[in-house]
Image 1 (tube, one colour):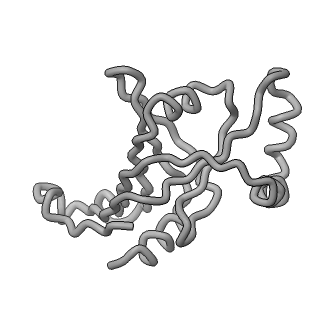
Image 2: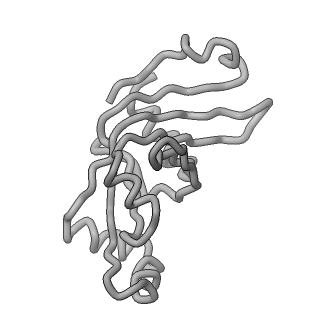
Length: 143
């Protein structure tokens, strides 16, 4: 397997559980990944949200993508660091791809901004029940 397999899996299973840290307390929540390509796994949030503050303090994340199936299905876990993106063209694309984001921003507090981010460097691996007691042996894919 290689990064192309990871990108395909992520795009076919975009619901992502994103783990961050707030001090010594782990935090996890589900996100709908925007898209993944050779330049990273892309997401967006609003600056008033706790996840934004957590990522600014500590950009390290773990992503978990899940595909239901036989047994416990298949998971892909990705570790890496978040990079925030300031790109007007990409923001225009976001509003075309997800017009509902504009409505969210209109209803947000006055000083709220849109924050786009990606995980572009890191490591991924796939997990199934066959790997249950050998998680450490699962091949890692660096990107």
